[in-house]
Length: 173
Image 1 (tube, rainbow, N blue to C red):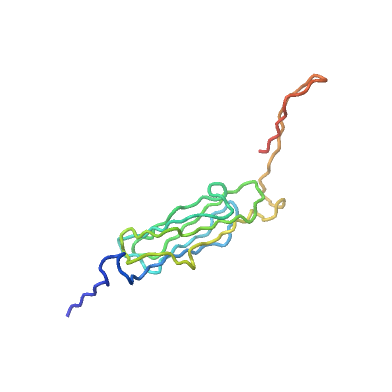
Image 2 (cartoon, rainbow, N blue to C red):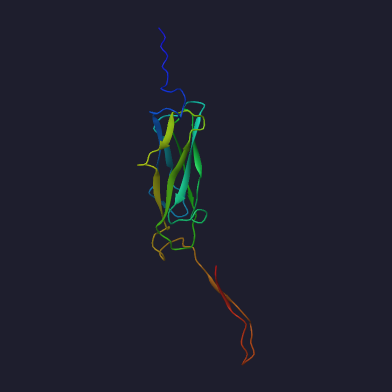
C-alpha cells in the first residue's frame, strides 16, 4: 500500500493554519574596538530543503555608526541542507574615547527564496542582538596603543608692529 500525504492546502502562503518557520539571531555581547566580532548565528527552527535557500535581512541601530565604528552586513543566506549560517562584523579603531557604543543587529525580514515553507517569520523573542564596542582599554589615557591626536597651528610668519595679523588656524590631526 502506498499512501500519499498531501499538505493542507498544497499552495504555500495560502494555508489558513500554516506552520511558520521562525528565524532567530544570537551573537556577542561585546567586542574590542578595532577587532572583528565573534560570530553572529542566524538560525531557522527547521532546516532548508537541499537545493533551496532562505535570505535573512538585517537593520542596524544603536549608538555606533555604520561605516565609522563598524562595517555592517545587510543579509545572509541560509543554504539548503542547513538551518543556520554565521557572519562577523569588523569594528573600526579610532582616536575617540568612545567606550560603550552599541551595535544593535535586528532581523528585518526573511525571504523564502524558493517557497520551501508554508510560512516564514521572525522569532520576536530572539530577533536582535546588542553588541557593545569596548574602547581598547576602556579607560582613556591608559591605553598602551593609544591613537595620539596632534594639534597644529598655522598662520603668518611675521607681522609689522601695530598691524593686525591674518587668521591663525588650529587643527587636530
